[in-house]
Length: 153
Image 1: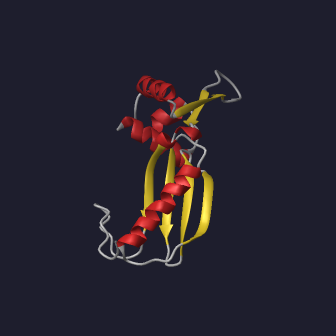
Image 2: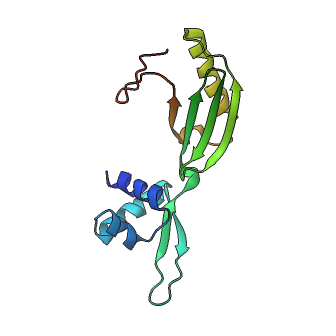
Image 3: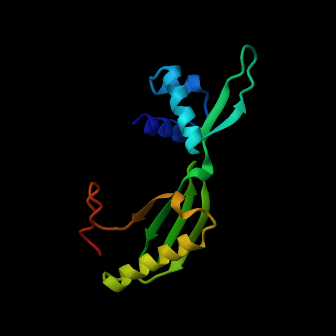
């Protein structure tokens, strides 16, 4: 949970010092330092070096390591599919708009969506194991808890 809070902080606020991070997530500096150390070793957090300040000791600036994780977003439209790949910092790495697709509420149409997404992922020059999630946007009634669509597929 603490690591999730740290990631949320960096997504919302960008890079920051350990002191700022500790203050914003209400933890002690030693606790935050320990977790940041672990997350740096895991490759999710990056040390961006010393922050220049007017006086005193210069603190290190930490933030999300952009290439440590990726997310795929899929937007299914009636006559096409939009797919994007973003890195851990939320920056778009690759975006393909208007991939030809004719929507039908059939198994064959669903299989085509899966094939398009699989092909898109295969084309990416990243470690596929670093794709943490694939999010699909479909229209109609969808249970936000379970992800079940009552309208299509």
